[in-house]
Image 1 (cartoon, rainbow, N blue to C red):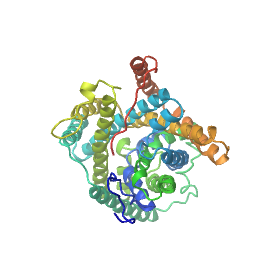
Image 2 (image 1 turned 90 degrees about the horizontal axis):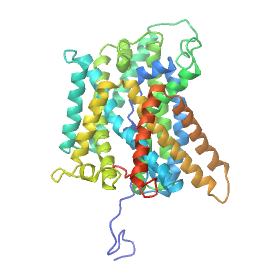
Image 3 (image 1 turned 180 degrees about the vertical axis):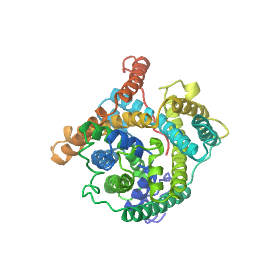
Image 4 (image 1 turned 120 degrees about the vertical axis):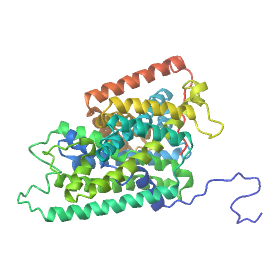
Length: 449
């Protein structure tokens, strides 16, 4: 074979390195979704006492530091990028297990909160069916579609992202028109979404920020593309950071105009669908347009989250972290972990009947923040503790990311921390029993992307 050929005889084919920095950023924005802050807007406003914009920007700073740690660790583990891998390899397998168990909570709760939100919004459109009825409908739809092996294509994701961006543009235009037509003589009107002396408390702000982390969930997925990216040692880190900035700025702008249109002091008819009510005040047709857009977005997110959770449980079953006969089984026809899809669907439906949307977000972030702290700690150990030359650039970002994530984790509500702690205690107890005090290996496998 000629010297210029890409693959020599006998060499196994490799993934093509074709993703540019722009491609990686676009992928990150699509995964996170450009409408990310709209669904939790009401929960954010209530917990943060109106300081939604500030909460999202503070959360962006925390995610920037964490994104740096993810990008650096992806250089070391380009084909196995995951929080539990980083922690298990760099710190200790038992802590890696704890991190992995916290990620299980994330994966299980994602479809649950999507069911809750879709059901609430669908009830606004068709109130004849009770909310619990809509929850059953959406849980069944997620499960049946995933059991059939239906998969969303990249083109469909791109079309959805383009549609969301078009809706966002219409929202901004309607909001500007509305605000120009309603003059306000209070000089603090434009700054109140950032800071309102009458409602501000640090506890409320950081409580809201702990929920605002949901806006950025998914940015770490960029690290899974290391083997397909051009110059991954540079571009994975840059793309992760720039994606956080892009989503942070866009999200802040989206909630800023909503807060101007609907002041925090005025209660929402339904906090779970607060953003829809806010923008509909600027232009009535937006109630249906934005409502449908967010139902589609949450439906797609919930559909993907359920199969991702099923794959994570399959990895755990295959590695004997869970009973292999049930969780490690694959349907021979559809080639999917059918038992796990049904299991996740049942758990998501049951949880949606007892949890509120806001509590579900906090529980999801309970697990996510533990994983983020683990990644920052792993980066600190890898690039500073074990490094021959101690550099400030390897010390400051992971430590800041660790402590900010810890502060946000501590700011979660008491009930969320209690329920999350029960989940973690059960998982750790199971791990101790399964591994005889962590003396035997117990691993988690990441779901296939």
